[in-house]
Image 1: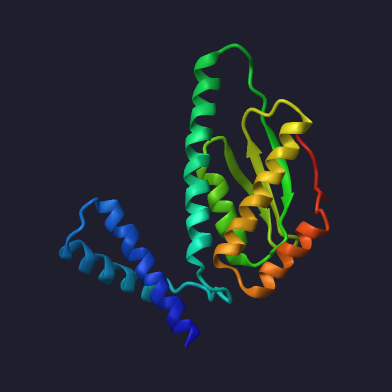
Image 2: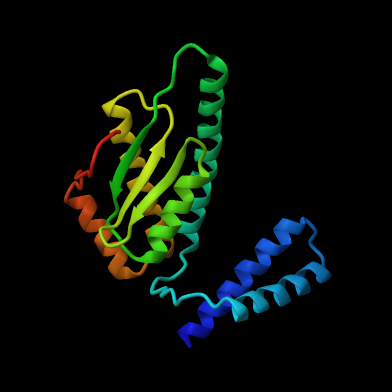
Length: 187
């Protein structure tokens, strides 16, 4: 039952990506996307990814709005830094420990971080739940701390949008404990 649901979700996601890549929304691209999706999943079966959570529309909307806001703000800051030319920007590689260590949430968080201009995942420690992130234009320790908080806030929004009750409990415990533990520093 769960495996079938996961396979159906993968087919739908791959079909949506297919249609977006073609840029044409028609019955032909829909059927072609479905066929290609089923073929890909048959020839290259995905490892089982357990999804114990549930989709929460309000949380998904918050994730989407904040993600779009982050895209616009980060793009503007990156453009300002590139065209400003007043100072040499510094970068850093930061380690950020996440509260929820499931492969799905690590992947979702890593993808969201990498899609925002100015940050890129360079490595991940699945067992420890640590993302290693290259960050552009870091001016000091305050920026490093702020970026770590931003990644943890992103994780919280993602878990509240698609996480299980147990995962939300982990996020709540981390928030009430004032989870400020960090791993590593700038390099």
